[in-house]
Length: 569
Image (cartoon, rainbow, N blue to C red; front, side, top):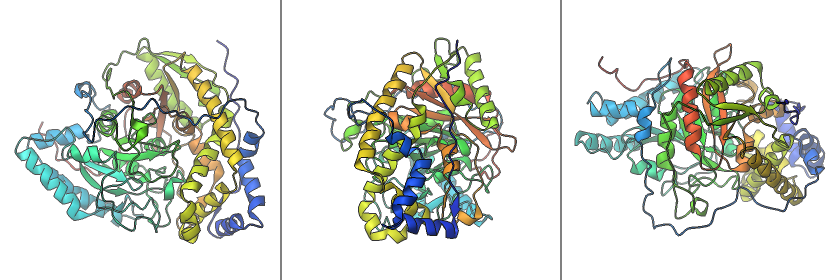
């Protein structure tokens, strides 16, 4: 077979800015006199000028499309799929993260209780804040609320009547998503002036299942970055190396899971914000199909590329999170008419008949250690019987610019009034990004959506010949958190592009994608293998991810807390 040659790597050239230089640039970008000149330079670096010059004949279609609407059956909770398939999934070799199943077993055997676990979570969180540097995993954590939930779960277990496989299991929620009784700050210092009156559509089913919601996890401010830098609440830290970025924007949820404070967290993903931090923090991150999980109660940031999904210690925990979080929401039309979640095939390690697509030039456009570990992950799929074949996906050079245009235009629109009233309350990084986003035009947005339709068509054609596409989750492992950016944020388009290089295609198409630990670089930082599949085939992604998980020896993070007593031998 001929080697696919369509993909051409490109290098982003733009100066890194933090501190005083970032302040100057933000001011210039916001100025009506100088903003246009600076925007032209930086948007050119982001590929926007090339995108503007690209001809397109497609009609305007806002992707991903909605399926025909069905009348939802009131406010009744959707049925949870059969969880029996999870019994066939066991953690892989090496370091063993505590799983939801471990918590349920410990409660059933009487070795501990949800209340004791909750007390340990609160104590370990305090310890994580006393470290140097502080881990900054949470924006808010209400002790009385956590203990009250845990007390109720303990009583249920004592009476032998747990609500579900998640009853009493600690779960963190990204502070972009409403949790009853907590403000939703979206990582800012001015939003969330009042506590949410009800849980988001993705959080409510977890509470109904008895999960102990342990607080609002930290995030990159308004989700507009992928490092986890947050000048208002402090930068969340990577459990594998606290001097490194945890990824973003779901930085806190992934770091909480990696640090052992919970086996499951709720993340949000508009451009890789579940999969990137999952990869950097050595855990599993699943971005479901568009509309699979309700967006009700999530901060309105990027309507057409937004997804909510689980970040988890293991593939089984990710599957469990999806099983409870997904389903129709009467108040989110995008969830209507979707096929029910299935976990069929989980635990079946024989992959004969499964076709895995690889585009070598794209796969290799990453740091050498990332490529090496991802190839090993693909080899595990091949050894299990998968048919690994080369693909040639066109228009990849346009994906970044089309995604940037889409997401930042939608974010600037979402913050139109906030920007007018609170411009100086944002960090310098966010001020610069929003100012640049406001320089994009309606023509840019419409043209990007037409190109998006073309890209969706290309991907659909490739996925007619393969079942999944295998790529790295990120182009590099976790970068250092620069000291000069801790109080200002930073603009570093080169690093951001390397981090996001493989993540945005799944957001543009609305297709499901998962990051699963595939190994480590020479310094011990985790590498994630990403699998992208067809709409509503999360079960296949989970099945393949489980095969990779079984073949990769996990390593312990530098910062990790155990919440359970050891089981009797």
